[in-house]
Image (cartoon, rainbow, N blue to C red):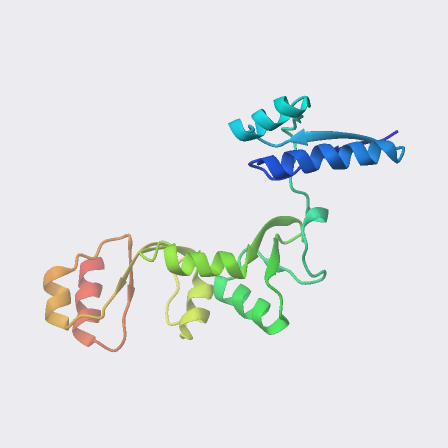
Length: 196
């Protein structure tokens, strides 16, 4: 008979441990082969309760891994690994979904992205370093390709939002710089000379 493991939170509290014990006992009375488990160390309160009522501590289960079949997501919606976060956001927003699988060229699952991930990254993320594809940058900035050297772009982001003199006198441009700039001709000239 197939073994059923019953467990609660990853960080078990008294309620989740006792619920696992109770449900496992119920399943056993229904003729199933169930056993309570915990996914982490129990706290002193839970240990006291188990000792007081004479129940052994459930065994530790250390091999619970998330599988694609366990994830709640809309089927037939996915995004490729080389797509931008903006593309993922727009795709989820337009299709009224909050979680999206990320797949490679063979449509093999690689990761997940969610609206929650995007929001957290937008608030707490690294806004000064970029690693992306050239096409994604063009798309996000709604730009036009003039000259392209590499498919992948990686470096430190500089936005020329200062006055030209302030920028030229105070900002250092090097080979790791990604300069976002409008029609400030003096900064264009400065940046071009720094890279020549």
